[in-house]
Image (tube, rainbow, N blue to C red; front, side, top):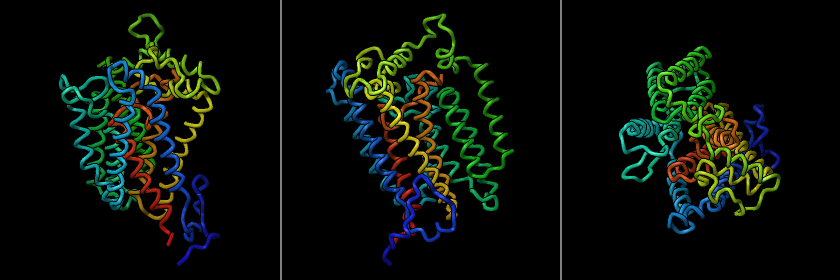
Length: 388
């Protein structure tokens, strides 16, 4: 049956849960989400090249070294994501059975000498994955698969299993990856539990557990707070002074409103530590200014909004797995971006989080693109279900 243009419902941002949704012939959200993802990916690769070519040459690599590796990682992840996204959403959610053991193994290996350096799990000196990021992805899939939205459908054995798995993940993230990853993972757990309509009392108990565990561990093992202390304590000792953070704030300030121009930044030439990874937002803000930073923030907000709207539409169609997955994946990307930006701006004293789509990390790029590919498929399913 051909579509009637007047019946189309373009509700990317202004989704309304009204009766007219039943007869809606589709949504423009899939195309919008695809455009946002493509812009973030391409812009991220361009800025990465600008931030990394000097370092690549200084290390004896071709000037496009980091750019090429990141591009290959993104392409492979997208291809894998396309194949995975063709599976039914409930089968996709079963990915936790693979992600959970892998993340636990990765975090355990961080305690073995020689396997963990610079925030990355390394095998024979080659960086493989950021354990904290893999753990967050596993957390999203565990909650999406085991915790049903409906209280009547929520099986006791699944609730117990999810509780045990989440506690194990939280403890391992705290002791193997530090306070930064523990904080972001805790936020995702709390927000997803509330989204899954878990009783408020259970959410409060979860919050108390996280607070008590985090505070107790930080008192017993002060090294867990070292990144935080180096950012918030007065400068009385050079070891507590993060020169890279000072340089990043100066770079952002020098960028001004319009920026120095793409490729014309100066702080990436030596003053910034790892300008191609955690501090790439400082390079971005120096070269594209406040205008560029605001544009980037808007893109991430739209990314999150479409994920949340897809989650809302999924609930209307009684597809709890898609609702939870779309919410969790979009929240994961958005919170990572927020944490990195606030740290680089000197506002949030939590280091180690990479900027999705931009920071150089083969594993981080793979996780970002794979998550985006799956999320696009969920957006497409919910937005085009009524089209013929």
